[in-house]
Image (cartoon, rainbow, N blue to C red; front, top):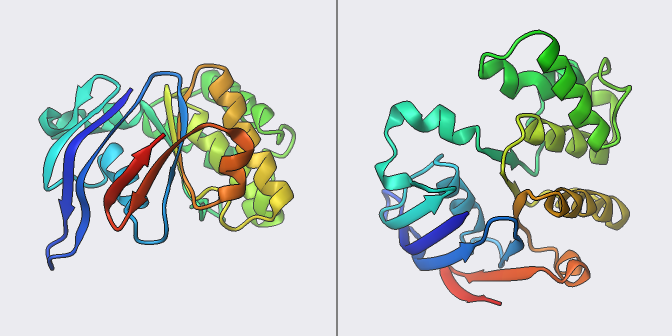
Length: 219
C-alpha cells in the first residue's frame, strides 16, 4: 500500500527534514509512525498525500509511483486517502453535515448519495443525530470524530492521521485510537503519526521509528 525507498527531503533554506528514509506498509496493515518533535513524521505524511514532493527518492502509494503522477491526476489520487489532522480543520460556520460532506461535494457528488454517505460516516463515529449542529458546540473529542468522519466519507482504502490524540485526555485518546483500530479491522490501511507511547503500547501494532529525519527502525 505504501513504500518509501531512499527518500530525502531538503527545504530551500537547507534544512534536511528526511535523510534516506525507507519503509513499507502492507495493504490492510495498521502502524504507528513515531519519534520526537522534528523527527520528520509530518513531513512523511505530507509526502504520502502529495502535499509536498521529496527532494529525491521513490514513493509508491496504492500502486501509484508518485514521482510519475501527473498534476491532472492529483485530485483523483487524493480521493484514495483519508487524512485526519490534529487540529481538525473544521469549518466552524458550516454544520457538521456540511463539514463531513465537503470531500464528496468537491468530487462532484450530489443528492441522496451525499446524505447517505454522510449519515453513515457520522454513525460510524457515534455522532448520528448531530449533523445539524455546528463544530463549536462539540467537545474536542467530538470534533476529532467529525474530522475522522470527513476523512472516511469517500471510503478511501488508506487512512493517515497526524497526532490525532495530541489535544485529548487519556480516555478520549483511547476512544479515537480504538476507532482507527475498528476501521483497520474492516480492511482500511492505517498509518498514525504520534508520540503517544501509551497508545503504541496499548495496541501492539507495528512501530516505524524516526529520529532527526533518519530511520531508527520499523519493528
